Image 1 (cartoon, rainbow, N blue to C red):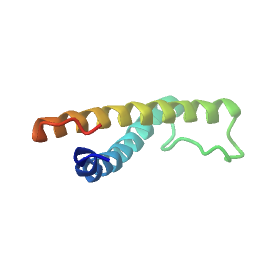
Image 2 (cartoon, helix red, strand yellow):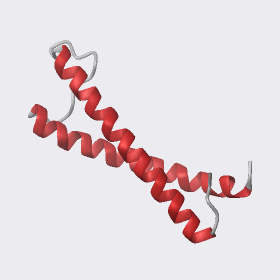
Image 3 (spheres, rainbow, N blue to C red):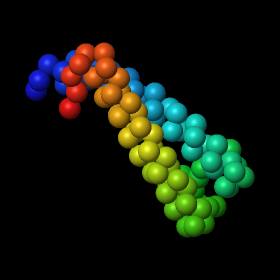
Image 4 (cartoon, helix red, strand yellow):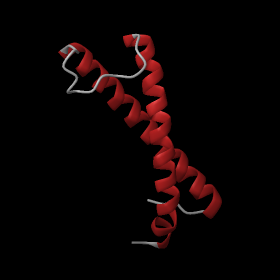
Length: 88
């Protein structure tokens, strides 16, 4: 493992945690508009339909993947600007 990967590790972990929190907020906001409720349903929620469960999971997956990719890319480019080396 090279030095830039090791140096980037704590930076990447912090970005991942922040991105996860941001993604959770975004998913709740989208679900308020789509499902007219405060939070998306859990897969084991007995009162919910298959359609609601799968739609909520699809939204969550898409948002988390997009936020993760954006955070990873922004973190890597910022790290390169600060250190001159790409962390990957």
